Image 1 (tube, rainbow, N blue to C red):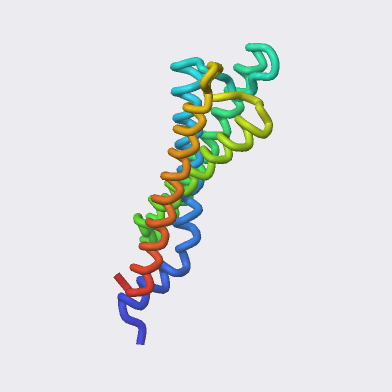
Image 2 (image 1 turned 135 degrees about the vertical axis):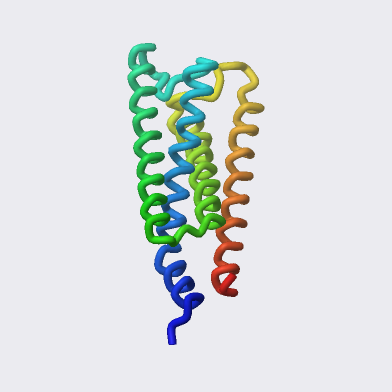
Length: 160
C-alpha cells in the first residue's frame, strides 16, 4: 500500500536530477552574472574577449551577459516546475547551485584564462595571486556542492 511517505520518496527520486540540474543552471548563471557585473562592468578589469578592440570586448560582454541570464532563467523555470509539483529538494538544489557556480568558475579560470588566454582576471605583473584566489574559490564551491548533494542523497535514502 502506498503511504504519503512512499509517495514523497517516489516523487523525490523522480525529480532528483531535475533538482540538481535546476541548481546547476542557476549557479552557472549566477556566477557568470557576478563575474560580468563585478569584474567586467564595475571594476573594468577585463572583457570576456580581450584579444581584439574595446568595442569587440564590449560586444563579447553583452553576449556573455545574455548567456548568464539564459542559464539563470532556465534554472528558475525548472525550479518553478519543481515547486508546482511539490518536488523541491532544497539541499540538493543548493548543492547544484554550488556545483554549477564552482565548475563554471574553474572552467573560466583554467580554460579561458590560461589555456585559451581570451582574458585574464586582471592585467598586472603578479596575476598568479588573482588566479589562485579565483581557482581556489571555485574548488571550495565545488566541494560545498558535492557535500550538499551527497547529504541530500543520504537523506533521501533514509527517507528524511
